[in-house]
Image 1 (cartoon, rainbow, N blue to C red):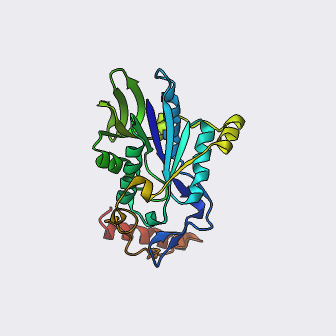
Image 2: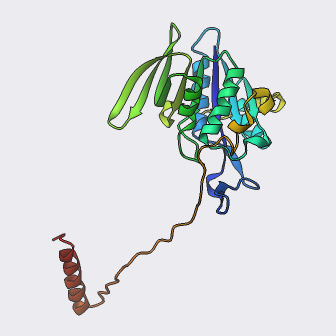
Image 3: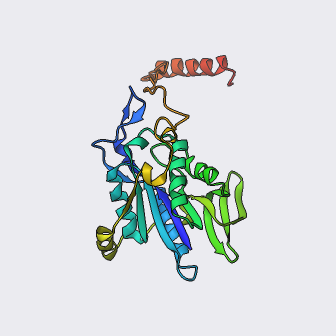
Length: 267
């Protein structure tokens, strides 16, 4: 059995900067980390690995610049078996749809794949669209907001997912795409032995030529959505300051508050 986890390297939250001219995130010179919500998907995969016989293979995949290799090595140190970095300058500016398409091509090359896990969303884009988009490209069932996942006999899985008014219990055939929430598990810390293994590990690097994706399906050309304009909102508040330093001012302030509430029909 093969479980693939899609992760993303994102800027440290406190370091996020935007280019207002292009509408894109400035990533150069910014500290990058593994998307925190993806670590829950990694932990879920590592726990599921031991529930099947023989143990499943856990493969972690990311699309990003060459420096995203560090994110893959961090996850390898947690216990993943191998990693694939999908990188190409042609991918620059990709939206969630284009990103999902490239990851889908990656999954096709990794076949056979029995289960695909993703974090609920990425902290930089905050859309939660890549997981479901990946399922759409691969024509697979998708389970979102999953808080508990169990592999069943006969090539199926059972998932408990969080919804607005409670929880749902669903069963789906494998292969399937599952996006998980924090309640799924607590991510483990890398061990010293894991870090040593990750440092020596060979990471596969694939480009557009390896994936055989059309040039007009990647990057900005393959992105049907884009940011037209970004700006910092100006917050303005009309306020009135009432001072109540003595008995006379207290009476005047009380009368003004009562009048204010009466004018708006709140009394």
